[in-house]
Image (tube, rainbow, N blue to C red; front, side, top):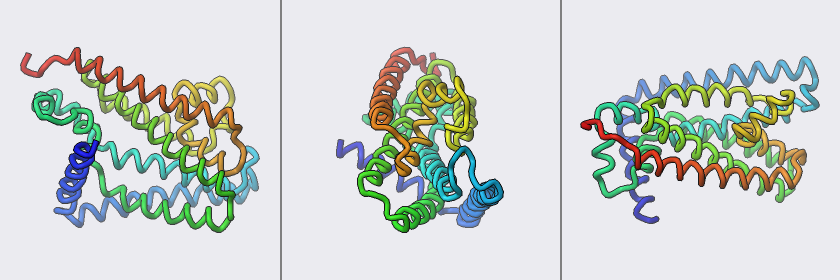
Length: 259
């Protein structure tokens, strides 16, 4: 385990050094992301202020839903950026060299190139969310489960990206699946409760983006039953286990680029 952490740390270090070789481009993308997040935040603020409530949620609650969504989404984007380079590796035969190295190919394919442009956004989100949480003096139990559910959300995001890598090995289709995931995730910038069944149940339990992006904030407001909390943790572990099994299945059926 320690060896894997050292390898991941080296990947992160090399990626940061590469991105900092062009500071103007780094800053340009960073500012662009701040503007994009800020514009939607302003839109959401004025929308809720003019309507007073959306689906029974107040202004502060809607803002916290949105901030939590971006915290989880930005973290997963930052960590798993290497997935966008996976298809070229398969086509060019670069994945053959990854398999020949004495490291876990999943670590290389999943965490080999994080995007540190998102790290600045992530830091801002953490500061804003922390200030909101401390100002509201929420119970420690709710805060603890809020953090645990965020970790569970990242576990689910990891499981999805592992499945994308496995499907990429079998079909060479990677980018389209990631775009589908991002489109589905954008649905739950607002609470999943605002959708009606069967769509609400589908995006909560079948494609668990509702669990990923809505459950942590609902836990803070005391709107999540303990049964759903347990269900979300169980689903996180089940999806991760199945994704790893799928990854190993795909590796067994991998055809080298030279074959």
